[in-house]
Length: 310
Image (cartoon, rainbow, N blue to C red):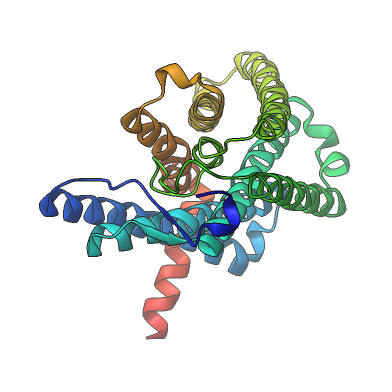
């Protein structure tokens, strides 16, 4: 194939060779998707319907749930379709759209995770300034900035990636259209431009990660000064899971995009992509709902109202 204009479709990575394993992968992805849809859907419905939950923390949690749904719905349904029907095809336009929306939702997710860390920092370390630093207007501006920057980042990466000449076939060693896999099909030196953009993005992500770690150091120092053991336990139980998910997300995503080609393999690429694109959206509802008594109580009230209404 001489260039990208002659490519009408791409071939995605088959998740298994046998029909039984293909169906097993379909069932696994189906279970993960349903868990993510149910958990994030409940969070969105509960926060939207519960007026007492209209606080900065739950406002950002609602936005995070939207990005989680977007991530899952962008990549997993096509992988499930291919596993169920034993196909590998994705159209060129479909690949462009998948890459754009995945980059969009992943970028927005990390921005929101950073903002949520700032929210925790202010609430624990500067509680007297919480109302002024995180007022309704400030929260709206931060959320809008997260979504707008994610849109621009996704547009930049998508336009730059698909402006490259692709002359090394159309086979992608991944279950969805991922930038590093498409760059492997390029035969011109211009792919270095996209690598440079990825490196800049990773540096920004790393900067946010350093901010998150620094914020949590301050949070833990403040928590250790709490005289009540119950209070310390409550604070740690909400902070540690959030930090664990952020660390998993950043480390796997960074390694997937910047690892040297010499250690690249389909199985490693697949494992890394699942860890940063599928696992966090499915785990986030559990982490943020099970650790929050107020949210759990609101979910039960909403479910009881729905059942009583029927």
